[in-house]
Image 1 (cartoon, helix red, strand yellow):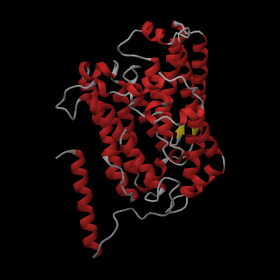
Image 2 (cartoon, one colour):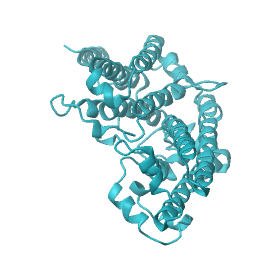
Image 3 (tube, helix red, strand yellow):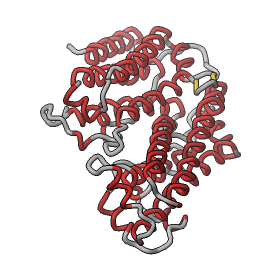
Image 4 (cartoon, one colour):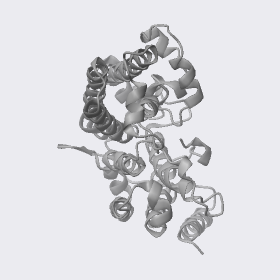
Length: 378
């Protein structure tokens, strides 16, 4: 019997015993004394969410400026700087993407900032247009034709050389000028969206989110079916599931008889797939611990420890083990799925263990309603 199944059986037996003991149906959740949720969510917003979006805003703004500078006179060194800035921006976004609640939800952060995969044929159609790429035009685009994933398509290639990419940006040609105008517009669209999210978090809307989060039964603009704690735990499960099944499992070929599928990798063109899995799992970690950079406060770990200390300790150990397993992969993920399959599988298994602890143990101790399904992934 697998670890996931054995835990489920133990939990189910516990419920049966408790129901029999009490002579009726009861909730299999801990009834310990109340926990100060207000401080927890205030800490998360102050120490993790707002600093995270500020860090991303800084990188996104730098990416827009680097795009403008590059387009003044495209050259090989400029392309390299542009690509490096995209990599930094994407990495911090993957971490911040874990903060999918409040303004990020109702302002459709994912759809405007990084919806993957892109539809390259539609991007090419947009590049043929000669209309100005102002804010209105960018906002009218579908999510698969804007954001960071679209910029990756414009800046990188896993098939063409950098010289070939550079030739596409030749501003002496009409197509090169249009490519620059489109890229600058897309980059600015990312900056505008994160500025909107930050403004709401720092203003009255953000205060309302925290107030809703700390009021029992409220939804914090995340949908009436959620409570605050429910939403965050479901978000953790989503991150772990997406990291394992989508970002690692699909390229490994887990659904195709073990045949590697490099085309299923996120950010294949830039060769940064592994960094993004690490960043996504780090996003889960910072929310759980309540720590972002030098900012430290309460995270969800405090609540889990309050309800069941052993589960909290084990989950923190499993998070560290998962990140360590990812660090053990020493080549790009596009190569690792064939050359270091055991290491990739070990990372997959380690992340799955995090998902199982969240979806069984944490859920049971906090009395969370699981609404996440495997179809919710990227």
